[in-house]
Length: 539
Image 1: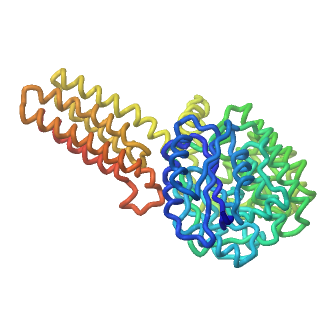
Image 2 (image 1 turned 90 degrees about the vertical axis):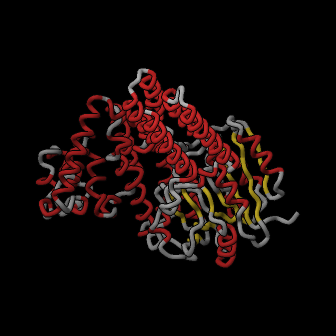
Image 3 (image 1 turned 45 degrees about the vertical axis):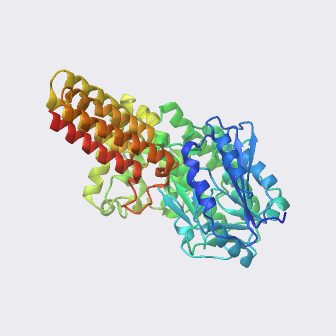
């Protein structure tokens, strides 16, 4: 059998329904010159996905699945997939993302035309951040800083297989979270041509409604910054002094080093864990950045980086908050010693200034433009500090990693509780209260159904909210008939969704507004309205 043009390598571990859109988009791919293959590497799935993949691949000669014991991270399955891939190119795709229908055909033609070793296709956000600057233009031979390759350090790209083999490029299976930085740093700095295809969307980054994904796994700051230091040193060894090196360093300072310290993910951690991050960042800056590197950073990060090196965590955060809650007109022209005199000790400022030019001013661009925004930010910080003192903020972050996830978890409790309470009030003869509670249950169920990956929980919640109407219909022939018809509609909606292979997973944050709710949510909302009206009529 002739080798295909491209092998799509997908590491798979307990994706549940979230892998279905990727499988569907592989089925829908436009014809590719010389064809393509899909290599799905089952990393010890325990949720039934392995059996489903066996059935799916058996019906497709261009797809195969490889089963292996769980390794705990995507690195090994990616390496296994690369090792068995037969394609001229290897395209690395995550299990819960997807490709546009013509992605493979476009990328293969583009890569061959430009003799590319690494090809980044235009990424589209479906609820997740993507590097939009990088895809402003199609570029055959891209290098920082003219083309900000450093903005994309995720492996969701296409690579010439001969290039990977020639340089022995594989993922470091010991690393956690930064294996992609190590891999991409080596690939970017060794490739003859890194190309960026921006004419049409190629790769769709999808935010899962359940907040799942490897990126949310907690990590040890010592191990994390040890591996980041390895990536930085790898780049320094490969790239000489100049604008390209500065672009890579600026990215890591902005995203993984100094920028990480003021993020909610770090600053509201318990004090000992928060301070561990500060210590590791300072050590990484001190041991990996070349002499004078801070002076060559973008102006907005020079003072924050100097303070991260010399200030205590409390001093650093006070300085950040002072700048983030000040008006630009108030801080323009101020020296650091004047702006931060109440926040940072004079000797600390003196040590920090030694890393910078003598006339370096604080980054005024990070201050706010209007009093309204400054007042809002001050109010937010005051509320977050109060939550942090009570310990509630940390618990909320641990419980729901994003506001949407937290809201879904709260509604998952509210919906059944309100439905049961509605039944009890109906038994007690408090019909008006029962209508209110059925409304609460219906609204919560509809919210949960938005971008839902499965229909049966929605059907169960709707059935539970229908019980009060059944109680109130006792002794009424028409009422009982209406309840029975509504129950049949709930069952029919569930069967339709089941036969549609959980099609609601295809609906995402980036869809057109009229498609966002999805079939499960639209049906749930309609049936909730029927239940509310029926309960009210029976009262």
